Amino acid sequence: MALRLTCWILGSAFLVGCAGLPISLKDPDLRLDRVVMRGVGVTGGTLDLVVGVYNPNNFDLRGTRVQLGLDVEESHVGDLEYASEFRVQQGDTTMLTLPLQFNWSGLAGAVRTALRAGDLPYTLRGQLTIQTPIGERMVPFTREGRAPLTRAAGLVPIRAGQ
Image 1 (cartoon, rainbow, N blue to C red):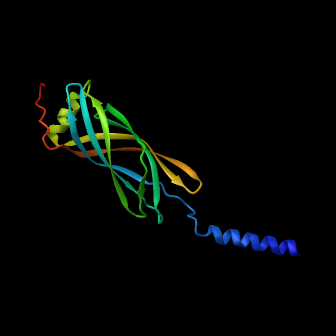
Image 2: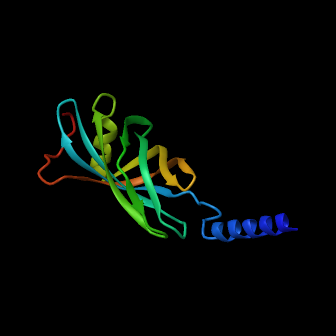
């Protein structure tokens, strides 16, 4: 009888203790907000991808890594890995600026067209890593759309044929 009572008390305490833990974790959502052409050289340049990470949960999330690849008009622009910790509060969006190095080879036409149009038709593929109470969780994503493309202050415009 004492063993049953002890098991019942321990089981109840365990359930009460776990009641504060989130039962289901909803995957965060990543979207490309805008692209800023920051540096341009003869062989390539740097794009700042400004992404928003949305947390649909009712508790804060801690992100530890973003890995992604960017395609423009079906041409691969480049890959990046952002390995700095970031926090996303419950029901909120955190903006991250992710620098991406690219080469002009095979991309000049697509990027020039996008610069003239003012937006970039893109596909992002990758994964977002978040820390949970039971360990790391990888959240894969694929996003397609159009994002505003701007030039950083002082950047000389690219002319067709250059």
